[in-house]
Amino acid sequence: MMLASARVLLEGLIDYAGLYPPACLDMSATVQNYADYRQSEWSWALGRLVVPAPRLKELAANAPPDVRCPLAVLLGENPDEEAQKALAFCEHDGRFTVDCFETKTLPTDILPRPTYFETPNPTDAIEQGFYPKIRMGGITPDLIPHPQNVARFLMSIGASPFKATAGLHHPFCDEHPLTYEPNPPRSWMHGYVNLAVAVMLSDEAEMIEALTADRSDFQFHEDKMSWRDRAFDLETIRALRRRWTSFGSCSFTEPTLELLEHLK
Image 1 (spheres, rainbow, N blue to C red):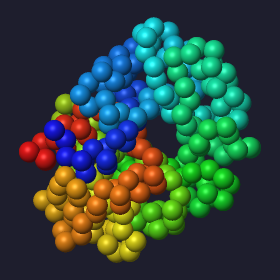
Image 2 (image 1 turned 90 degrees about the vertical axis):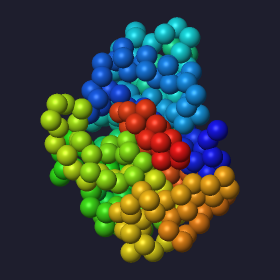
Image 3 (image 1 turned 180 degrees about the vertical axis):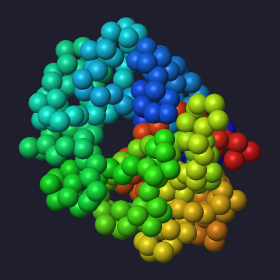
Image 4 (image 1 turned 90 degrees about the horizontal axis):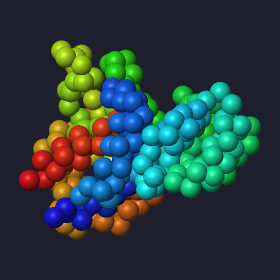
C-alpha cells in the first residue's frame, strides 16, 4: 500500500505528455497509454492529457469511444482563438474536457480556464492574471535550468499556483539519459521530489540545497515526508499541491515506478 505522504504528493500530479520529446509517440499510442493508465493501479497519480490545440481532431479520431480525458491544451500563436475553438470542440465531442491551457504567447484576454504562461519572467504571468509555468529540462543539457534559477523562480512567484514541464520524469536529481535513443547523451537532471521540497521551503539557499540533495536525504512516512532534519506533515504537503498544480511528463511509468522502488 502506498504511504499516505507519497500519495498526497503524487495524486493527480503527472500530466501525461506522450506526444512530446523524448518519447515522441504518435497520437494513437499516446491516447491508448492514457486510457490504460486510467485503468491502472496508479490511476490516482494521473492528471491531464497534454495535447496541442491544432491536434484535437486527431485526438478525437484516435480516442476510444468510452474514454474520458481531462486535457491540458497547449495554445500556439493565436491563443485566444485557439482556446475558444478548443472549448467548443470538447463541448461538442463530450469525451474531453479542457481543464487548463498552457501558452508561450500572452492571450489578449483572461481565458475561461486556468492558464499557465511560460515566460522568462514569471511575474509577467502573475501581473497579467495568469499562472506561471517553468520548464525543468529537455533533450539537451542546455535546456536544464540551474538550481539557482529554479529557486529564484519559486521565490518570485510567491504563493501563486504554477505548473512545471519537461525534465521531471525521475523522482530525484541525478545523472540520467536525456533521450530513449541508443547511446543517448547524459546529464544531471532535476527530480520532482527535490522540487516538491523546495516549494515547501521559504529560504532561497535552502531551496537550492533541496534541489540538489541526494535521494538518500529524502524519506517518506505514513504521516509525513522528510528531507534531512526537516519534516513536512500531510497538511503541509496538501498546501504544496494547492500551489504546484502538476508537471508534464512524456513518461508516466518512470516517475511512479522509480518512486515505488525508493519506498521499498
